Length: 347
Ligand code: SF4
Picture 1 (cartoon, rainbow, N blue to C red):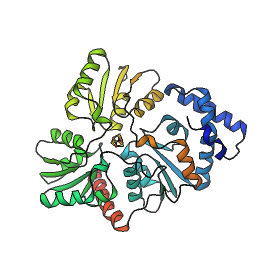
Picture 2: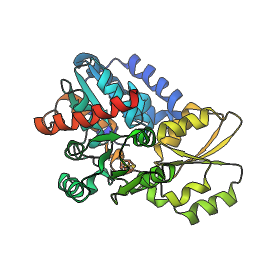
Picture 3: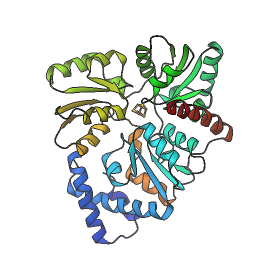
Picture 4: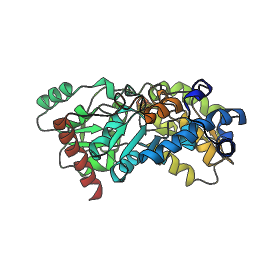
């Protein structure tokens, strides 16, 4: 843990407050494997971030794939992509600290241009989003002039700006089913595109070949082997998993749908969450009476955000370099694609 290394950067905080914070953190984090000493290391950082949040009127958004200390230490909203972007859209806070990847921080800026949006590591990309450029979308549109262009939320602002609609794993299938077009350009994620195609055979989905380096690790052989060893365990796949593994599981969907599945199956005692490993930690903390078998797949992009760079960003050291800034035209065109999504979802 790096917390000790920066203790000197933390303003002096009353020892009683640190004691209380450490105990609170331990109650929340013990189920995710944190010891009391870890929580004493984290407490000064958490207390300092809370002070800065109040002083600067900050909302902290944390993706489920963040580490448990960020989620239980400093988050105001914990959620999947659609929940975080929605929270960013609706807040009246002046500053939003996004603990997630750059495409999501950009999406928050697109829907709330007045806010200062900060990302603790401005380089926190995503293998899906980084695999396509705006010029690729323009070329696709030229090649398929009758198709509607739909971008998955994990895409850059420039790619969203070239699109007719943005979708999330939660609304992709429903939104595309409502579109009058038969041909749909879907990018960047091939797995989500294939899952949508299977659900909507009347559509012709033309998919870009973007891949998530985390979810592609789970192959049919690995899952079949797991099933043999754990026949009672329910297997939950994220939609970004290889479509070939989906029939081996009990459900597939976005992060929110996976969490809802657990809630709606109170009699099931064991779940295999086939997605980034952070979600299993979150679920253990929320349902300590049940077993969550996580993957050991860490997303290096999500995990590049931590307590230290979150604090430094708020302290001002990173403010200039860690602020999300978008060219006006890109922001406006991307906002149109996002608004088209909201309009379709609300109908
Ligand atoms: S888990 Fe996959 S889709 Fe999510 S941010 Fe990491 S690389 Fe991108």
